[in-house]
Amino acid sequence: MQYLKKKPETAVLLLLLGLVVLAGIALAVLTASNRKAEQAASEAADGSIPVLAIPSDTVRKIQMEARSGTLTLAYADGSWSLAEDPDYHLDESSCNAMLTAVSTLNAKRELQEAAGEDYGFSTVTITTDSGEETLVFGARNAVTGDVYLQKAGESAVYTVASSKLNCFLKDKAALFGAFSPAGLTSSAIEAV
Image 1 (spheres, rainbow, N blue to C red):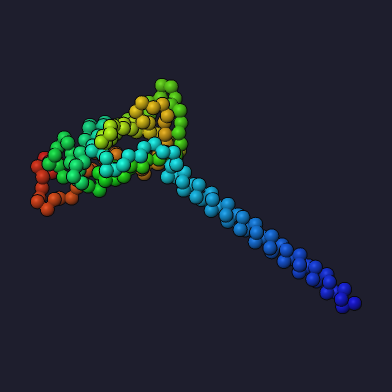
Image 2: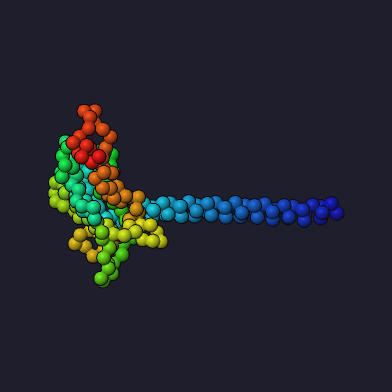
């Protein structure tokens, strides 16, 4: 009789053990699925559609045209200068952020240009050893916060994370760097 009593208990234990193993497998599958989804979301946030890839050592000039006017940043011998005011003391880190942005610029989505739609309000032209690339920045998407972008001469419109393009939204005053060891520049005095 005791043998019959132990057999149902063993069967229940084996059943419970089997359920625990199945739950462990389900948890492992769910964890792997979540990891893949997080990786895909991270790639989507950075953008995976190549728009522009310019080797930074070939960039000679970045010209920004916006409502506030035109600024031309010239790059030579490892330093930046403002073509419109060569004595102006530029913030090198702001200029280098622009250089980084154009060296590898990826979009999140590619759209077809809608007829009659004007996406652009500012233009950035990058002059390199081998030619020019012009980007037209548009308005921000109200839902995603991404910025519309178009390469001059192409019909495709891209959406790019605004964090990638914020470096181009600076006016002359925002590009002013810390005071040089030699003192104030004439531009800094004029700005006051």
